[in-house]
Structures are given as structure tokens and as C-alpha cells.
Image (cartoon, rainbow, N blue to C red):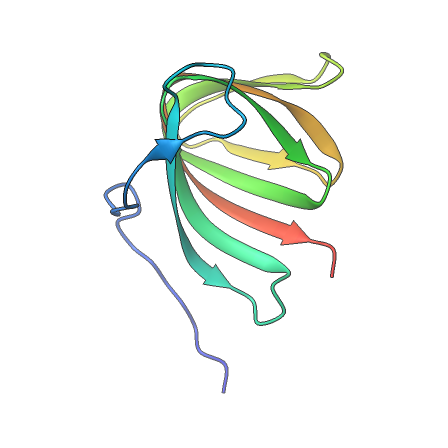
Length: 119
């Protein structure tokens, strides 16, 4: 049997303790995340992520990501520098498989994410 899943009030969902952001260039930047669902084969994961202001590197060479920004603001730029986007509440950002770059968070960001990796 396949069960439907739904989740509400994601803007207020407790994500647990914040921890240092491993790829941060900004001292003291922290993040928290809560996985809401994962496919049985582990190919797809859905969750909520939050991060404090600062700058960090991001690597999507092993998985693609779809983000829906719930709160905050950030600038995302590709590794080559030409692919710059400013994002905020209500925006959807797609980081395709193979994308690498940096995030600069201006106001604490909370987003939902869908990660899909190659099987």
C-alpha cells in the first residue's frame, strides 16, 4: 500500500538544534534541518532547512535540488560567476545536477527542499 504524505505549518516546524555549517566561509554560521520524507530507494529526500546569515559553498554534483523559500533572503551564484540569483519568500530555486556555487544569506533563510540523486 502506498500512503500519501502531507505536512503543514513548515514555517514553524521545530528543526532541532542548530549546528555549525560545514562549508561556511563565515565564522559562527549555523544551520538546522529536518528530513520529512525519503523514498525507499534513497533517491529522493524532502525536508526543511534553515541557515543564519553568512556565506557558504554548495555542491550539487551528486544530486539536484529544488528549493522553495519560506522566509529570509539570499543571493546564489554559480561557480563560474555568471549565474547569479536573488531569492526570497515565495521563490523557487532549482539547482540542477552538476551545479556548484555559493550562497550568501542576508536574512536567515528557511526553505523546503527536494533532493534527487542518481540511483
